[in-house]
Image (cartoon, rainbow, N blue to C red):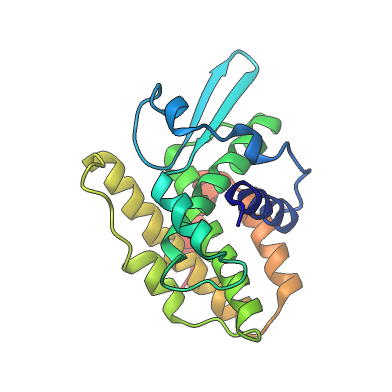
Length: 214
């Protein structure tokens, strides 16, 4: 299984879901392990730099993540063996797509907003694949697996860890709303409309919307 092809497939699914113009494939922005060593951080990450009106992006995928995805294609079978790796890869693709969207629309974006959207995106992408593979069924356990059972690496700073936890909690509430209102009744068209509206909100509007959810 080609991992770059999988990443592009996730990218195209996100662009279709959010009614975005297709961008250059994320595979063209993948950095090798040797190239990634020249940049700060570790593991899977999306690198961004801005010089005037020019935004430069690079995507790094942890070798272990790539290896697990190569062993079992999540588009064929998404399960405990590759769920974490699929989510890690999806988060980086989400960052890539959202940063380009914000650059194209001349919007600023905070790290919390970036992480929140990535958390929502990984849930929707995983739910979509599981629905295809299980005759339309999406287990209520999925939200728990993605948002409550996930672990933050010990090497992550406390500031970043706190931001990840906040984004995860916010996404859990929003995805619970999506699941109850749209996924379980199979209201796919309405799910797409809601997701597109949410995607285009700024951070304050996103947080206000989630705060209003029961």
